[in-house]
Image 1 (tube, helix red, strand yellow):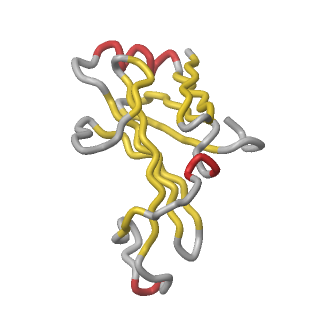
Image 2 (cartoon, rainbow, N blue to C red):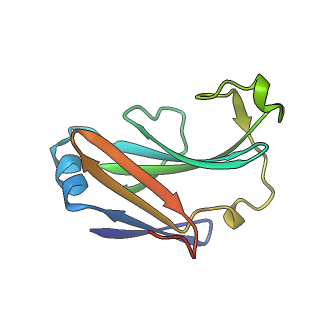
Amino acid sequence: MNHTVTVNGKSLRVALSKAAKRALERRADALLLEMELYFSCLIRKRVYVRDDFKGVNAIPVSDKLHISFRPVMTQSCAIRDVPRDNPPVRDMPIVRPERYFPHWLTLDYRRGEWLAEFGYAGEAA
């Protein structure tokens, strides 16, 4: 199942596997996929799957699925000083966020786990 959402004039293609679609239909509440683009010494892409999205500027894809995009950065770039799993981050002010907004987002559901990934043109979807 595919959806297209337009944010700041940019299209995001959202592809759901059949298993993800079935799992979403069984949910009572909506699910949030927060796409995080992390800037530090390196760039990392991560999708957080959240049940609670109070205070998040979420964009509805359907009645059961919402998305958000959050560019963040660390305070410093000293890898040895940053915790490996969850380094402290802060929102990154971006002048033209549409230039960094992803082109695609996929969602699957396997063995009781949500699997999500986002990317840009030229990457595998």
